[in-house]
Image (cartoon, rainbow, N blue to C red):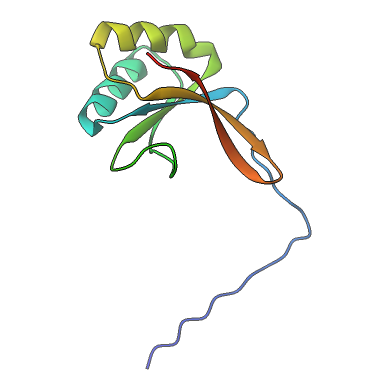
Length: 106
């Protein structure tokens, strides 16, 4: 018989990660997201390809997390590739959790 045991450790410190210098671009197509990510990576943009957070999109959409400094390159590449974008969101972290504020629709 297998028994699962989990432990919860309280360090007495709330750790909050802020992403004030990053934006999240939601893309409905996995293929478009992968292609766009690869192009941005080639242009030495600081990007990450991630699953879209719950609540921003339904289904299996992907998102690209990118640095604020790369915003101009990202917008240029989106227009060049004619990728379909659901939106670009600013990531705001507070005591209640993470919120996403829509700052652009392309």
